[in-house]
Image (tube, rainbow, N blue to C red; front, side, top):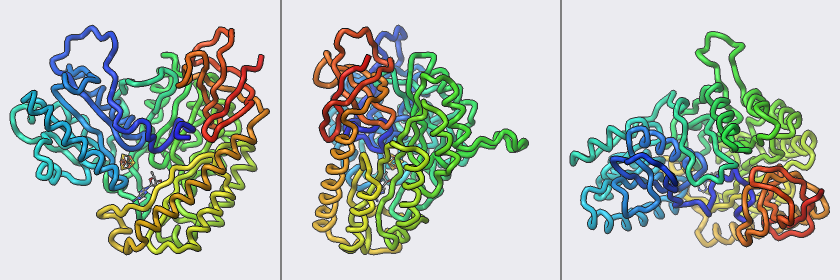
Length: 475
Ligand code: 5AD
Ligand code: SF4
């Protein structure tokens, strides 16, 4: 169930994942760093940028935290639980520091940005605090901390996109990669801490994106996921002197798709208010742009949507889903849903359940509302739905999604899909695992075909579980 979409927002199976070391790296490094990541795909992509910055300065990655001289945690603030997980993890590093004096612990990412120097006061073992726009300063901060001072840089930037940094792909299957195309968010959804932790929206130089994607393709990658908090508002104007240079998200998608028909293109996340017909037409025109859209609804009630500052109504969202179905028949759609936002009634909750049914989501990321300090909702509204009710409503939402996911998979039985092979299935090296354009995980026997990961193959679905289609290769 959790493995449906590659471009998932929060991949639970990856939380706390540590980087793999370079397998056959001949360089003798002066220091070893260990980095563990939490939160969204953007954060995992940022860790790859951090690895690149550190590597240039002579630091080598290790997966073994005990041999690390530098321990980094790239953190998430989106819900309270994400922060608690990080705090707990930090206490485990205390022992390591005791056994190996001189080991430095650095906190990166959204929690560093939210708490700033408070982090150094609250967690005595932390030596370095770095916000998401200050990673270029990391080598200097490490030096500062090594001399015994606490080091901090949480400045947000209006233009940092790390465009020129080639991320180091670790823990990658060698087939699919994330490519960050923009940073920050200007939307101000009232529940969300992101505008405060990641700053203003800015788009990365289009040429640098194309260059990175082309290089990935030349190195054997077959799928890129273009990442941003709000990809549809991507807008790159170069130096602003020539309007002909302006690149919208639709144009960017097209340019990436034109690198090669063998390179699949995905993207995440879309705000329903910003995804345009032009983007939908672009998806329709190119077979290699995946027919899958992550379109977070958050709530099905217009009143709640208004309080969330989502800027669309229930009807407007439903019309958008209809438009997607019209222009892109068979397109996969997934969503993010929050249960128990401030003042939510049973009626509002039922509107959420019914919009899920209407939209027929293939998958959803479902959460109960967690009040975040400093957000508009925290300042304006009372967090007045009890935990018990939030949990019960969330359970009903999860149950609804489980039914929709199973129904969606059942409808695919008998159909044939083009699958990009990602590797062996988890359960058996006699089976391949790959994905359809719609993002569904498909498992099928290798048989005697001479295939490799990264190949495309036609597979007919014969059976399914809630999270996986089971099939056989069609010759
Ligand atoms: N509480 C619960 N869920 C939240 N999200 C963002 N902020 C909160 C919060 N305060 C969810 C939204 C968003 C996803 C990334 O996380 O659904 O789309
Ligand atoms: Fe990603 Fe938001 Fe979490 Fe930051 S707070 S890691 S942007 S999900």
